[in-house]
Amino acid sequence: MFQNLTERLNKTIRNLRGLGRLTPENIQETLREVRTALLEADVALPVAREFIEKVRERAIGNEVLQSLTPGQALIKVVHDELINIMSDENQQLNLNTTPPAIILMAGLQGSGKTTSTAKLARWLKESMKKTVMVVSTDVYRPAAIDQLQTLAKEIDVVFFPSNPQQKPIDIANDAIKTAKLQFIDVVLIDTAGRLHIDTEMMDEIKALHAAVQPIETLFVVDSMTGQDAANTAKAFNEALPLTGVILTKTDGDARGGAALSIRSITGKPIKFIGIGEKTQALSPFYPDRIASRILDMGDILSLVEEAEKHVDRDKAEKLANKLKKGKGFSLEDFRDQIQQMKNMGGIGKLLDKLPGVANVPAHLKDKINDNMFAKQEAIINSMTKRERRHPDIIKNSHKRRIAEGSGTSIQEVNKLLKQFDQMQKTMKKFSKGGLGKLMKQFKGKMPPGMMPPM
Image 1 (cartoon, rainbow, N blue to C red):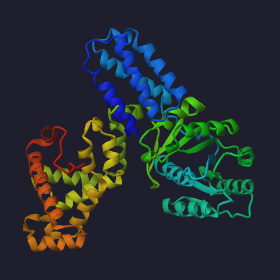
Image 2: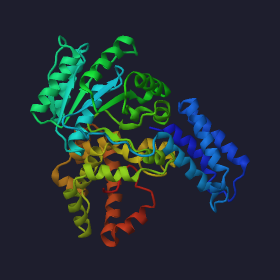
Image 3: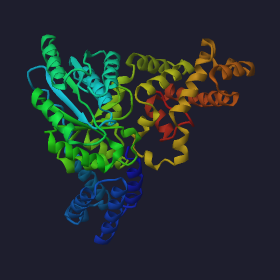
Image 4: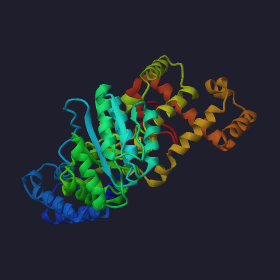
C-alpha cells in the first residue's frame, strides 16, 4: 500500500533534506509536486486541495522558514498534516455496553465483508480476549452463510446458523438472544451486500440497524476502488450512522488514495485495514504510523508488535544463547527464521515497515520475495537431519537428490549453500562481538537473498 505515493513523494522531498534555506518559490514548487503525487494516488481533489493549503500555511510561517533545518521542518509539516487528514489517532472500537456488544458490518458485495467479519472476530478474540459470535443475515447469497460458518470454525468462534428462508431481522434477534444466554461478549452481524447502492438495500439495512441497535456500525470498503471508496462510504453514511470504516485489500493497492480521502469525505475514521486474505491479516489503523510509512520513515512500532505476536520467544532465546556460546548457526535454525517470518506476514510486509525501503533499487527489491524463501525452505526440507546440521558433508550426488526432492535445480541448491556459508561467518562475528558489532557489520546490507535471525 502507498508504494506509488511513497516513491513519488520521496523523490519530491528528498532534495529538501539538505537545504539550508527555503524560499516561497521552492516551497511552491515542492507543493505542486506533492499535489500531483496525491492526485496520481487517486486522492479526491477537494482533499488534496485542502491538504496542500494547510501545508502551505504552515510552510510559509516561522515554523519552517526560521528553522535551523527548514527542509526537515517542511517534511515534518507534511507528516503532521498526513496524520491530521486521516484522523489524529487510532479510533478504537467502542465496546462499552452491557454484553453482548453488537457490531453491524455493512458494505457492497465483493468488498470483503464476510472475510472481514471473521478477521475482526479473530482480532477481538486474540487481542481483546473477548468471546465472539458471528452470524450472517445475507439470505440472498447462501454461499456467504457457508463461508462465514467455515471461517468461524477455522478461528474457533461461535457461529449462529441461518438459512435463506428466514428474515434478516429475525436471524439477528435470535442470534442476540442466544448470545445473552451464552454470555457472549460481542456479536458480529454480517449483512447482505449489493453490486451497487440501491433503495431496497438501504431500506433493509436501515430496518436491521433500527432493530438491533448496534454500538458499532462498520462500513467495509475495497481500497482498490480509490476515491470511489470514499464516495461509497459517504453514501452509506448518509443512510446509516456509521461509526467507522474497515479498509480491505490494502496489500493490492499501490496508490492509497482511499485511506487519505475517507476521513475527510465521510467524517468517519478508518478503524482497521485488511492486509491479506488470511484471517489474521487485519490491523488497527494508526494514522501516525501510516504517515511515517508514506514518507518512507518506516513503522518500527508495528514491526515490534508483529514480532511480539508471532515470534516464538523460546526458540529466539535458544538461538541467541546458542550463538553466544559459539555453537554455530545451522540450516535448521535458518528454516525456523523463514517460518517465523512467514508467521509475520512474509518478507514483503516486513520490508514495507522498514525505513528507507523506497530508496532500494527496484531490481534488488524484486530479488527478495516470499517465493525465494519458499524455495529455500523446500531445499532445506529435502535434506537429511544430518545434512541440515552439517552442510559441509553435502556432495554433488546429495545436491542432485536435494534438488529433485525440492523441485529446484542444483544451481539453486549451490546458491543457498553459498549464501548460508556467508551467514554462518556473520553469525561467528555475533558470538565474538555481540549484536551491536553484528549490526555495524551489516550497515543496512544483507547477504543476497538472506535475512538476519529475528
